[in-house]
Figure 1 (cartoon, rainbow, N blue to C red):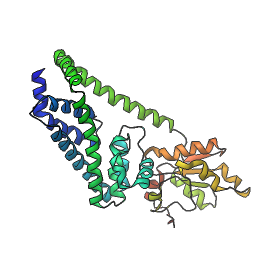
Figure 2: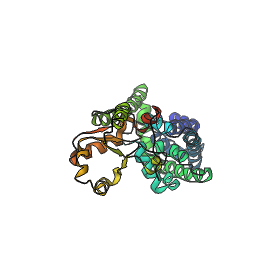
Figure 3: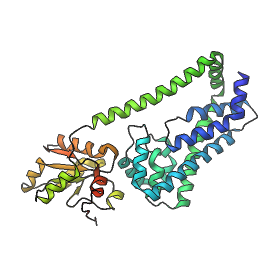
Figure 4: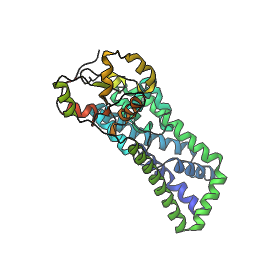
Length: 317
């Protein structure tokens, strides 16, 4: 056991750095177990101090987060979609992250790393929202300090229990390593399964952008529903679209106040968003169907597909 503790104590800082860096860059490698174990090793050895572990973790967070911040500022929503696809969290979606960031701004970075599916894209959102760099670095560093500090503190407080667990794995030899590897693979598999189940729930008929454009050209008047965030809507919308806030769906629906003349619109409703797999659009489409709207379809590819095809965009006031 002393040999394993010595190994963790001597090389634990490098392990923490690369594990945290990989996690913050988007790879599904949980870093909290590493921080807890190295924190416990730091308490049991004089080779490494707990503040060093926290400092290394914060540095790794800042490096990775600065990369995504810069990418978000330069490439915008393309980076957000990439982060959503990298993340295995079934809760991750551009729309949800934008809503949280719009509400709290840069201070939301204080707790971003504690919220599944939010920390993965919040830093890119900060770049997209043009959050001032000093403000971003300040709140992101504090958030990383809190996140890593809690893990190291847990390792320090429960160091005796952690040492016992390390002893069990050391006694198991290579089977212990196989067990650790299997646990990591199981974690990734469970997360992937959760994401697969989410995507299955989002399966429903889509309308493509060319079909919608043909409908508008023929003079048809489908009810076009925009469910993006306020930030996204500043970039423009499909002509004639009305907005529904997914977070306040019932209130938004009442505000539509459809007249008898518009009752026919219930028979052809098209919903669009800026999420991978049209996640937000599909969720709202399902809610609209439960509310009595008959023919509701998400727009395949969302607003990105519409603009990429060269169709007109209406600027919002």
